[in-house]
Amino acid sequence: MKLPDHGRHDLAPDLEQPDVLVIGGGVAGLFAAYHLRLAGAAVTVVERGPVGGPQSCSSGNTGFVGTQGAAPLAEPGVLTQGLRWLGDKESPFYIKPRLDGGLVRWLWHFSRACNDRDFAAGFAVLLEMKQRSLEILRAVCARGDLAPTLVSDGMVVAFKSPEAFAKACRAVPRAVAGGVPLRILDAAALRALEPDAEFDIRGALFNADGAYLRVPEFIVGFAAELERMGVRICAGTEVTGFQLAGRRIQRVRTTMGECRPGETVIAAGSWSTACARQLDVGLLLQPAKGYAVTVSAPPGAPRLPVLLSEGKVAVVPLGGRLRLGGTLELTGMDPEISQRRVSGMLRTVGAYLPGLGDLTTIDTWSGLRPCSPDSLPFIGRAEPYQNLLIATGHGYIGMGLAPAGGRLVAQIAAGEKPDLDPAPFAVGRFSGRARRQAGRRNLPGPRQPAAAGPAWIAPSGHGGSAGR
Ligand SMILES: Cc1cc2nc3c(=O)[nH]c(=O)nc-3n(C[C@H](O)[C@H](O)[C@H](O)COP(=O)(O)OP(=O)(O)OC[C@H]3O[C@@H](n4cnc5c(N)ncnc54)[C@H](O)[C@@H]3O)c2cc1C
Image 1 (tube, rainbow, N blue to C red):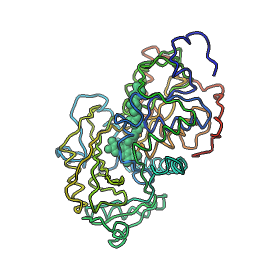
Image 2: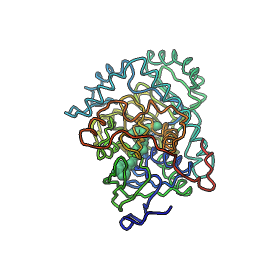
Image 3: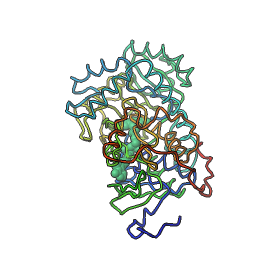
Image 4: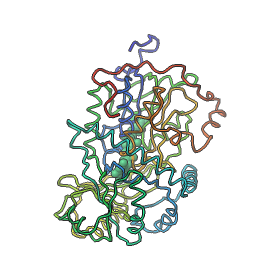
């Protein structure tokens, strides 16, 4: 791409002038880069840490993808349950009491979404996005180095209480009609699937679409694949500021120098709020901390991934190891690990799978999930800018949403008709506050539609069909 002469001298040679700069090398940023590259854009990804490093929420999670887990967090009745958990130091849910206007607004919108209508609408949107994402993942991981990172042998959902199991069984026909291949397991069927594991539960379901990504291997391997496709990935590069010209981002400042992208995508996970705030774009996100405890797999470990439903713990087999994921804590941008809650997770695992005995911990990791109040990500253009896109807020199911979310980013950037309705993901859906702020600070007015789409040329060997 030919650069204009003026101002070129202070552009960082590694970053130059891409069609699109993606901020964040987690799963959301990488899938945005993938689809943008398939569409023919010259793409640079900047990542503050190493790609797949522990700072990223995408690096240490349990990796569940597929049709399980499409229910929004804001569920009718969840507030009562949450209040009950607040006083329990080992419970899977916690809010750190503090004076934080963003948290109060987030909780207010969350509580408003806890009704049957919004729950059903959110579920339908998330399920469709997860189904499309699984198709994309299957194509991306069909062969080569990425093939062993996607395991799709189905998953077990285990229930401890008769009430929860009965409720889940009642929901099975509707789930199946909606495209979730669930079936109720009797004791013999569970034993056939898991002959070595000892369960102390009241019942279980099997989801034939259950699948999981092994992380960080998938993230590291996918980033390498993107580089082979021609995406420039700049690890160890942090975005520190923006320079505006009218309604456009003209320059992006990084710790490695400046660049002049045609479009900028903020996909910085829980850090997106701070990044977007520099542009006076308000994002209603809360970081929701979770832990993943990786242990040596003892004899009797399950062969399939298992969701311990009421305990809110996911169990994933990783060869000689098991990864246990759980807890959701609204404690701000604080990665500190609470040993009490980790003990609570281990106790939950012991209660459902007593045969595992004492577990030997290899590693305990915390990650900050970027959560919106209605559990839907923010994907789309951010007013009032002409060349700013947001791709964040994938919450507790980002591995399962980002593949289709990235395609939506690319379609919006290219001015194409998206294959998912973008309205539920609108960046400004919770308020006109960002726009009012922009008016007060004399920022530019609302964006006009681009006159013509971008002149991107598909890279050779990637004609735009893979993964679609
Ligand atoms: C315990 C746990 C278990 C989970 N299990 C699952 C699961 O089973 N299935 C599932 O679908 N999801 C799961 N999730 C959620 C999933 O991990 C997240 O939704 C997803 O990783 C979010 O991806 P992201 O790319 O938005 O954010 P991240 O992965 O956090 O990536 C954002 C990146 O941006 C970088 N960055 C930030 N600021 C800047 C800057 N200024 N300049 C440059 N780079 C910057 C950060 O370093 C970071 O690497 C789990 C999460 C946790 C914590």
